[in-house]
Length: 633
Image (cartoon, rainbow, N blue to C red; front, side, top):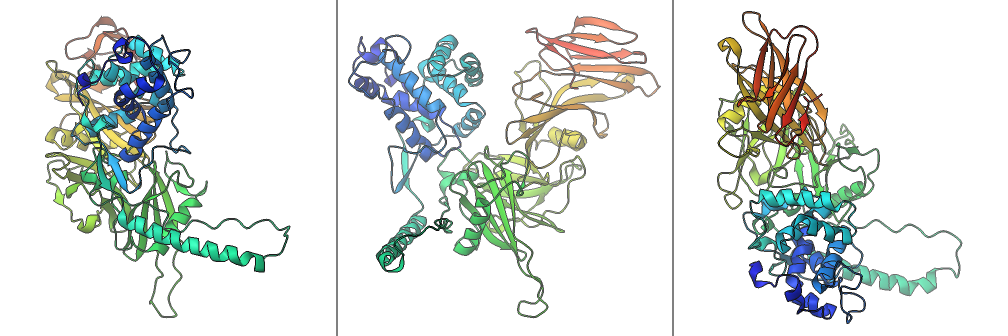
């Protein structure tokens, strides 16, 4: 969408003087819908998001639509500005499942035209709060300055407008442009594509509705004959909804959307049309409570929305059903009886089991595989429909080639191995279909949960280039570093979405003892929390030594500076205190029993102090902007 074709807000947008609210809204409708679309949550699916954006803007019309807007409803006397405040306020406060939504569209699904950049931008937007997304949209769409955008958020009722605009501005700077000249088509909610919904599911629902209507009519007609005139007994609770209360994605939906994740998986498995089995799985989830097996970060309760069926099949004598509601993944297992099928020696089947896992921010990598079953032979995964090739890899043997892994109908053969204490387990190396991205391979490590963790690697700084973002850990250097650092991760267990190894400095050791790599390893959870650990990776591929770890956002994209210290003994026995810091550190302050240094950081951001003396030492780093840092404690 070329924003140059839209009138800029201000006098030109209102004809020199505020006119009627309806005229202002219609004239700026496209821009306001884009603003709402960018601000709304990114995890609701493009169809619901498009309709919600139009609903937000249409409900922004004041009750007395004929009066001029700008009278006490927003800053200044500009009609567009007042409507913009109403739109931002409604989009920021938007509930996930509002009661009355309009407009409504039946029979088709709407989605904005996908482009290659949309998936990454959607992922970045999903990391922001709704006010921060609004701040981003105000700056990107309307070209507002930071204070101007903060003023709009303040009028919209945001409690921390300046902080929200600051977070949105960071994303805008990452796009390397002060404001959009052309909005990606994937965010123009007024230029949408249409496709049919799930036709078979709709036919089943209509049939079920017709049957239910006939049953209700028969029951109502029989009530006068069968029911007493009055009853003091409490009414029986309504029956649970039937097995058809699940949604199914179209088989090719993942090819038509720019937001990949569990929400666009089709229903797979030979039992996906078994209403009794699927109904039992849905019922088990509806009855979930505090005693349900729930991984860290997930909510042990019933689904928050209509479940989507991802899989229903039989593996090694166990029926498995996968369901998702947009923020939680549920796996229902129902083992068969052991022993002869029709003999007296048959043993009763084990009790069905339900396991829940957080999955509200799934994407092309974090939504690429789900564990269907584990047994003595290993784990079997269901892979995303966009996976074109799969293999297994030994993380501790980086020089060995990966081994191809078969996955007929999306279900892999057993992947042997288990995770050692504190270390990631077996690793999948997956490659996306070229429809998604060319030559896109990535690693997923089993941490014992329903979803494996995405492994990434951030290479050491290049003084002649900008800071490097995390990348896929499939290159030779990334594999070497992960081979050494895998068991130094701050945590390794269910609930971890991503593990990143950031090599923030390299240091040549005294006495030509080789090169030491300094790393910060980070574990990010599905709910946005996480932890970090500082570690050193010795020469000669020796295992890493973890120095310290702590919860928080250290070594994340929101805290990109760090410093660490390490006591090391040279081959001839001389002790050293080694210090290393990240690229933006400009000054190092080191105090030991034998030394006191306060000096500009060398170009390598590393120090080696000989004979530091026994006893504690303190290290502090100062960035060019004046931020003072201490090592992770």
